[in-house]
Image (cartoon, rainbow, N blue to C red; front, side):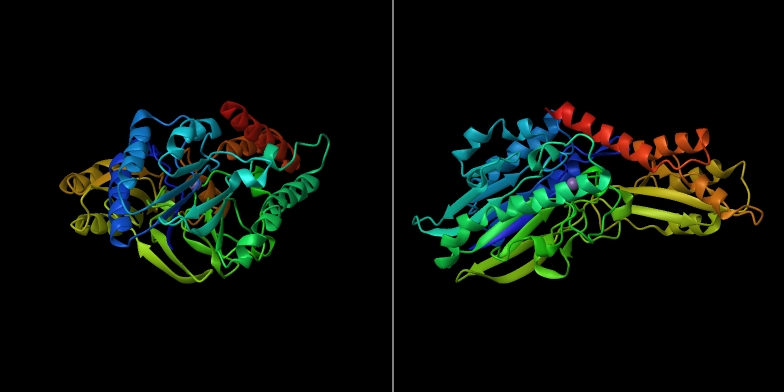
Length: 409
Ligand SMILES: [Mn+2]
């Protein structure tokens, strides 16, 4: 049985207010083609279908158009789980209807593991694969908050709760193991040691609840994860991996390869695993350095390999402020306007020798790079420069998370 693993589509995402619709459409078209070419029978999408809980009509149209088209291909089973960006109720709303098209949607967690356990059959009705389709586990799914617990206790509780959720499948999947039916698990979480880019929202406060490869039961023949946007293995285990996002969601991902995984299960085991690179239609590109070097790089930039105009992030390293800086840049950019659009222009780094390192770092940050938590921390630091703010910041993060969850429910 041939399975395709993908995640983190983030349909509806915007980068500095520009829509990614064309890039998503390009990816979904490629995915449909790949499913046909590779004769994929099962599609696993491990969370973050949408970028936010209330997706735009454009994002919904992308989603439903894709589902309609994929039903007409050789792909007979589609399993979609919710991520931390998805709203459980938005994803689950068409669940019963989609069920008729062999599209299984698990928007949020359930206390009964059997609700998340899906059996997939061949056209002849023969059982071929069992999938433990675990969505993102919210704090409330793992265990209700305990008043007065310390940060460490909370972390322990979340970790144990996530591990216990996977462990609960073990008694139910023994029968498959005995019949040599492969078992696949899904998940949307931050596994320990993973490497994040800048576009993942913190999953639990301070990325608590990181579990390692050892906490997944050995019965799983493959674990299809979502959340981290860079494709990677967990603790170097070949069969536990993140597929990553199909398009770069921030400039920190410009050098990442974007992929999906194709898995072949034979005789009850994962027999083969291949990585397919997703073609890119819009290049995100970073220019950084002294003015003359950046001007030179801009002037020779070649976008001919891509169908859409490139989006650029720019940061200059200067010896002092230049009054005609913008004018100089505009001159170069205007010659390239059909190939390149400047999206983010970060404040220049002024390399005066008298400046301390701290001043230079401070100049680099602006609103594009700050998160709510950073703004709060900066405020604390300016009001009480000598105090320890870690507890206040932790409480603030907890409030942010609660706000997010309340908005969804
Ligand atoms: Mn994501």
